[in-house]
Image 1 (cartoon, rainbow, N blue to C red):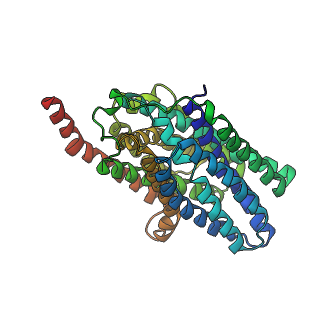
Image 2 (image 1 turned 90 degrees about the vertical axis):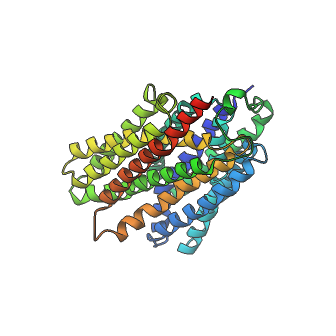
Image 3 (image 1 turned 45 degrees about the vertical axis):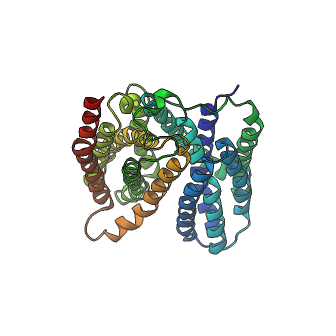
Length: 391
C-alpha cells in the first residue's frame, strides 16, 4: 500500500516546481518573438485562470477521488505545456498561460486536502509545515535547474523536459491509484470542536483567506520589488540571489521542528499574529535597508515569519471545514493565495507616490497581525473558555 499523503507531497512538489520553472522559459519565449511585455500579461492571465480553477476543482475534489482530480490536472498540463511552443504573439502566449493556469489548479487543492484528511486537529499544523518544506525545496530547485537547462539546451528542450516530468508524475498517479491506502475515515478525534461533516465555518475560513491574501501579497511584492531595488543600489544579480536565499533559510527553519509544531502546540492564531508581525517588520526593514548584509537580515526575518504563518493558516483553514468539504476549503484558500499574488505588484505601484512597495506591504503585514490578535482575544479565546466551562 502506498500512503496517500506521500503521493500528495509528490503532487504538491511537482505543481510548484512547474509553476516556478516556467519563469525563465516564458521570458525567453517572449523575447524570441519580440514582445517581452507579453510576460506580464501572461502572468496575469495565468493567475486569474488559476484563481477560478482553484475554486472549481476544489469543489470537484470533494465529490470524486482527490487523486483522480490531481492526476487529471497533471496530464492536462502536459498538453498546455507543449502548447507553449506554438504561439508567436502576445495574445497566443496569454491564451496558453491561461489554459495552463486552469490545468494546474486541479493539483494543489486536491493534494493539500489529502494531506489534512483524517488527521486529528493536533497534528495538522506539523503536517502543513512538512508541506511547506516540500514547496520550499521545489522553489529552490525550480528556477536554478530551469535556468541552467534553458542556457544549455534552449527553450524547446527545456519545455520537453518539464512536460516529461509533469507527465510522468501524472501517469504514475493514475497507475498507483489502485494501490493507495483507503481514504481515511473521519475519526472521533478529528471531529471534536469542528464543523459537522459537509459543513463549513465561514468565519474561520474567511479569516484564513484574509491572512492567505496578505501573505501572498507580501510574497509577490518581495519577488518583484527586491531585485529592482538591489539593481538600483548597484548589487549584482549573484548578490541579489544570495541575499534572497536568507528568506529561504528563515522559512526552512520554521518548517522543521520545533517551530513546525507551533500551530499544534500553541494554537493557530499565535503563530499567525507573530509570523505576520515578523513578515511585516521584514518588509519595513527592506524599505530602509542600505546594503547586502542588512537586506539578508531582514529577508531572514521575513522568511521566518512566512514559515510560521503558512502552516498555521493552512491548518486553520482545514479546521474550518467539516469532512467532505476540505477540497473546496483548500480551493478557496488557494484562490486567496492567487488573489494576493495578483494584486500585490499593481497595488504597490499605484501607491508608489505615497510609499515604497516594501512600506505598503510591511504595514499590511502588521495590520493583518493586529487584526488576528484582536479577533483571537476578543472572539476566539472567550468562545473557547465558554466551551470549556460548559463541558
